[in-house]
Length: 139
Length: 139
Length: 139
Length: 139
Image (cartoon, rainbow over all chains, first blue to last red; front, side, top):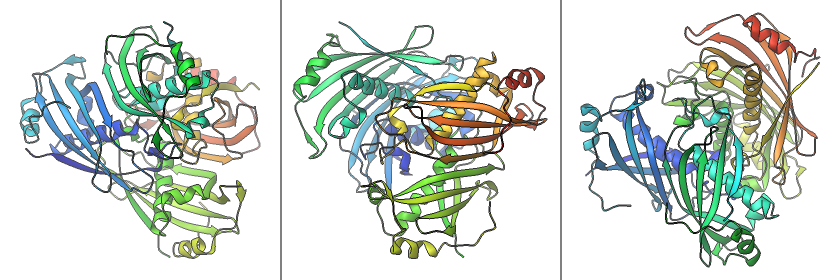
């Protein structure tokens, strides 16, 4: 039911020569929202070198540009599907006024980084994440 | 029929703490392939400040990671749909051994940057791009 | 006397394949600290397209690496010299434990972006900045 | 006597909202020139995870901006000092017309990444690098 929220201060480098947040940068925001989620579960970033959460697919619809007057974006994130060794993350990216600027989705796969083999989502991770589970009719 | 090909030398910053090209960086490669296409049509990068080619949607399937032993990636790009003021770009991203590492697609919209209004694809641009048109049954 | 302080959440992309914040990223932190300073003076980021504060010189000493367990860095910034059309900014970059990780300095030049000509620091900017002036015996 | 030369295609993301290559990006060019040097000595990028060449100090003087009409930069690099466990790298960054846009210098330290202890420059590395040694009266 709950969504995980991360507020990210914009950096000067997020803006490109057209004066908007560049389309590539949104994927960085999504990435940092996922890393913050894992931090909230009590795992350090460096734990990702052992159990990798790799992106198998990314998709995004850009709805309105983010302008230079904004100081931050907000990323709302929830889990919309759990599989054995994969899960789907959905996102809404909000500008400073709280308007949805983009809707996005990632398909994640859990990987044992030592062997590079796909592994089941660890039970503790699945349990922590289930707090953010929300059934969702697609992107 | 033809595909537009761009070879991009990898940068140290393309790799993240897991030692692979980061998932976000692929969108930078796609972006640079699009900019190279526009350069090949005789238009400078700064022309994009007048007629913007904005990304309305991005999607990618990651097939295999790109490792630190690689020195370059190759981006093959083609146009799979022409609308009045929008078009679809498809990509294959190849590692140094020539294997497909990712397949991706962008929906582009042409915009008059002075007014921020959607505008028809200029005829000269459409004609130049049509050289790279290839009907494609989806991603 | 006062120093301007900005706390910057680390991003996953700040870390390179060696698992530390990459040496290049520190200059991004310095840049964002300067932009935050200008914001605090009541000027929008987009004002920088009119009166540019361009970097003429950058220098940094790295004292200790920033590790993946950290969530943020702090940038303390002060003005150590005022010239007619230039000024010096000095920085201390602190890790999450409050230890100084790097000391740095930039020489800035004010430029009229329309003509690309060097221009005197506007009086209002100089006055605002003088709050952060601190004599300093070099880097 | 010889200088090591690397030509780097510009990326769209290298340009910031002011329409020039951003001051931070130059350090990325310097970094990639150093990595290319190490590659030329027959060592893979991933070897840097064992013997790290860490930056202890960076400095740069920006001489003229790089504009959006340019497609590439050239980085000329040479070694201006050899110590026991450290060395200095100097750089000239040239725009597409061949004009020097920036002069820079890095102080590098060799580190055993397993123990994070400073280590002597390996003899083979020192010998390879000496080809690019050039006495230089400072920056």
